[in-house]
Image (cartoon, rainbow, N blue to C red; front, side, top):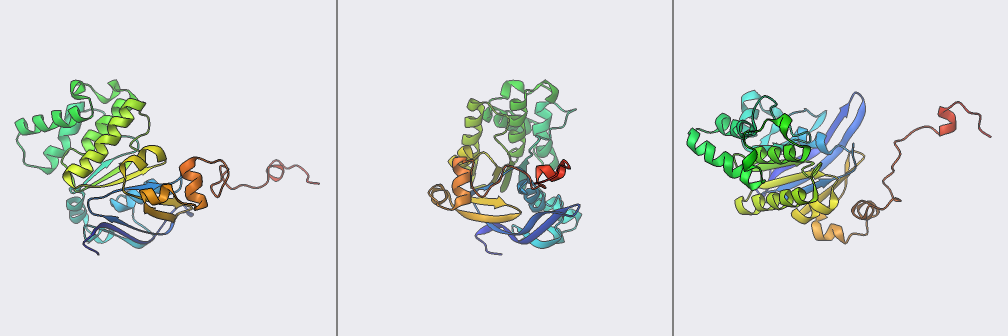
Length: 268
């Protein structure tokens, strides 16, 4: 593994119940950079993140994180590696029986030896960064969807991990919250030298905060490059995706038989 890369993915294959999701994915995530993985819904973005974090095992291929082969690790090794990661899940994943404060404090208590006074200060700082310090005593069921996403982000950055994975970080946010979260992602990356992977289909926001972009389609990387280069690209897939064009290589309809055949109608 190159010392310049914190993540390396080589010839990664994965299927769900016989349906191919990833079909030979190769990519590198350089240290200290913010990288977006873009693609339509169902193209394998979230599956790729679960493979990188060891939540799933591939059919074949290799994932290296900080020089370690993720899927060759035993449970203890994987647990140690995950201490270096923070993840904002697509569905937030907050503990429903814990308050906002306790949700943020949880990884600090789990992975550090900090005393409760220090944990309190850090929790309030993390919540202040996402505009929710005043909501620390609320329960998850009392939060709006956007507030829940912001708490999930605060928890992901709770212990300043070396690798941050954001799975659809901009989903369900109003324009003001969305801008705050986008700025926080960039500040976290720049100030601490953290590596960030932003998995999303929100092109306009992700391109504001990342240095490099990978595009996934049909289980493969179809294009990649520096953000500015991708924005100026003439590649049909990239152009269609970035500019939200209705016509191009990305099809809206899931593959199916002709409508007449599915409905049992005679064809002329």
